[in-house]
Image 1 (cartoon, rainbow, N blue to C red):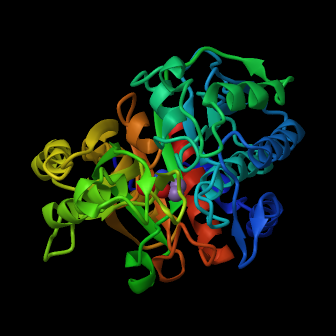
Image 2: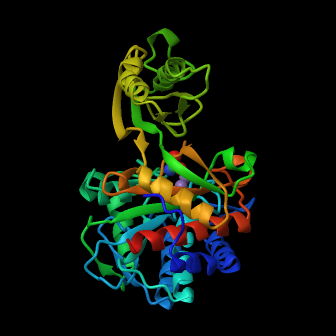
Image 3: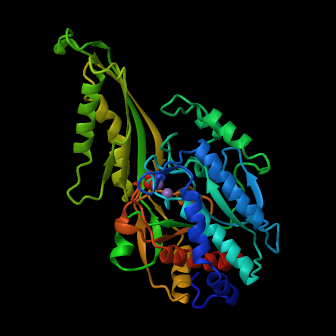
Length: 422
Ligand code: HGY
Ligand code: MN
Ligand code: MN
């Protein structure tokens, strides 16, 4: 559905987006888990996450939004529609961050959604369908892999029980951290996991350089590339660094390094489209003079082409096995996301809304994954990107301009109003 002109009340909602109010809320959130260099470290289900949830709920209550939470901790802030039985239009993103995260990744989408609802109030806009802003649990997967856990459970791709025994680096079970987080949200109504959704639109910083280099404030996102995550565990035998002959060692780290080198060769790509990252490694006993007996390392592979990501994903285990030598190896797939194309009608609506508001836009794919990946399995889904400085993200230096963030929120407000009044 492309609209040449927007409804008057959709334009009014967009015009009521308050740039300073959005910026002030982002600044308030950035204080929670703040780290040097203007970054944020707010791991999922941590005390910092709990604090950010409490702050969000305090704002939601001031706006008279109905607050609910599901069994994986997804938070829903609901603005009533004239037809309470209508499936809600949803927006949102995540509040958890990478360990050296930025102050916009995820939280911008949650607060742009809140700003869109407050702007509708200010403009006196009523919608037929309810609108819900969602803060999805554990989108990053940094502390408890895999990523997009909350939206995955909401979409029915996995269950909460599937993730209960996932441990963080300190050995804390997800189930225990989740219980603490839910206990800290006492006055949010409990709701079942999953439910009908009319449409989903997520605002996010691009985390890439295209919008900034095109000097554009708005991107109509066409889809998300495919992604595979694995945990690879190599088991050998601890031995004395001074006495154990190298030829007789079962050195888990030596073989892990060989596996990683082979995976780098597997994913080598002169066109630099394939993404291969080993971001996490745990070594046991992790002592300078003991031969490592156990290594766990993560594998993150991405590619926009369905056949290519399938081929690379299938090759991970055999490649690791081929370099195990005297060690044993276990390869556990933890995430399997095929490339996803967003609904053309939603992409067109974002573009049309942007144009109707006098904001030129461009279409672009997302290299990063988002909760929209899983919402697209449930309903017509799209995303709105805004530029960030030099495309830097998952880094304390992540930065964005208040005017760009507000432009994205305006397009979001208009898009949500259009969808909720269809
Ligand atoms: O890894 C990702 O693409 C996202 O930032 N969680
Ligand atoms: Mn994100
Ligand atoms: Mn991220």
